[in-house]
Amino acid sequence: MASHVAEDQLQVFAFLADPKTHGGVDVVRIDTHGAAVFLAGADVYKVRRGELSFHGFLHAGGASGRL
Image (cartoon, rainbow, N blue to C red; front, side):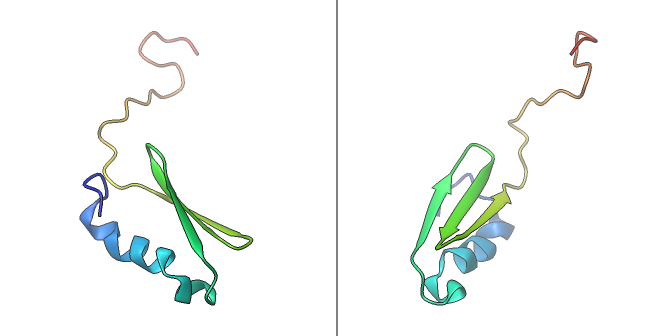
């Protein structure tokens, strides 16, 4: 499994990637910078990654005080 996945999410990702979880439907996994998305037939599951310390999101107002 990729190193950017938090260890405690491995079981969740394995569960969602397993076709048996979705009645035998093929599952496609798409990894983004902040989430893993699982496509299973007409269903979509998005799981945000744990420990996203590398994201530099600013709250409203940001460092400059402006939006």
